[in-house]
Amino acid sequence: MSPGDRHDVVVIGGGIIGMAVAWRAAATGRSVAVVDPEPGRGATWAAAGMLAPVAEAQFGEGDLAVLNLAAAAAWPVFAHDLEAATGREVHYRDDGTLVVAGGPSDRAATDRVLAFHQAMGLPAVRLGARACREAEPLLAPGVSGGVDLPADHQVDNRAVALALEAACRAAGVDFVADRAERIEVADGRVLGVVLEHGGPQSADAVVLAAGSRSGALAGLPEAWRPPVRPVRGVTVRLQAPDGVPRLRRTVRALVHGRSCYLVPRDDGGLVLGATVEERGFALDVPLGGLADLVDDARRVVPALDEYCVVEVTPGLRPGSPDNGPIVGSTPVDGLVVATGHFRNGVLLAPVTADEVVRLLVARADGAAAAPGPFDAFRPDRFVAAAAAP
Image (cartoon, rainbow, N blue to C red; front, top):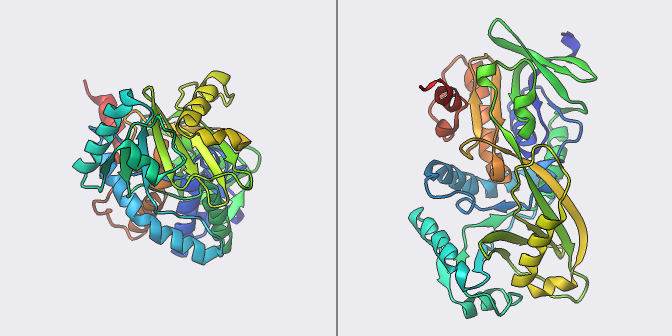
């Protein structure tokens, strides 16, 4: 590998996780490169930016909910730091989320949301139908009640992606518009990566943050290949024309057992989403799933009929076997994994970046990393599971 192409850290993947890691790593004085043909696109670009620490975890996923809560608590500082470093707004909003039942049959689901939030010690208040419409006047008369979740916030994920790229460049991070083809390993330590078009890039450490494609790179030890899979989601971006009433707050709706979310933007935009489809790496958008999403949203907020469609965006979330992230060091010296964030990539970006940098610093100091917030989500949990009889 050419010494001229050497960095202290090469990050494979320029989504919100990879760029957050690169930015924080560069702040420690390390030379950093991000390898990605389109940084900030992919799942990061398709997301809605909801910061819902418990809504995306289920009963039985207590460790994930605890991690998500720590991530939510880190977001105000992360957003402030990012805006201060770039002069760009990321539109962090802490005005909470309304979870509403589209009809009486969906009330049981909203009650489960309420119970889980209360079990985690979060503020959550049951609302009747009238109180829901007082909180959000655009809700349909058929909404039968819901839950107010003041601890669920949001950020404009696309603004974050653009700000992170700007912050990285200002901090001296090199962006390599290429794909990593192989991780080079010799004698138990990482040497760098080989690019599809640009040849070798030497590095003292490599961070694997390639989302749903993290398990596909050549050169990874088979036992430590992260078991991630693509889980397709589709978001629809709308715009409220002048004079059309705008949604005040984020709304998560349950309609005939299906979930959808409506996330308002400061500029009058609105993001619809919630599709979860296991269809491999295909990015096509079937009409049926899209129609269900739009119909459910219109049932809850009839005023959407006056909104204009701006964009339909598919993305591939990196799912793991237990829905938890895969973050930590590996037996290959210098190889750190940061993937598998599934529906929590935006939420977990600040704490993932801090954790990866903590591991890099501990390695450089020749010390074992102390226990940390990702201890339940280390890569070795799947190695152990595979070895069990």
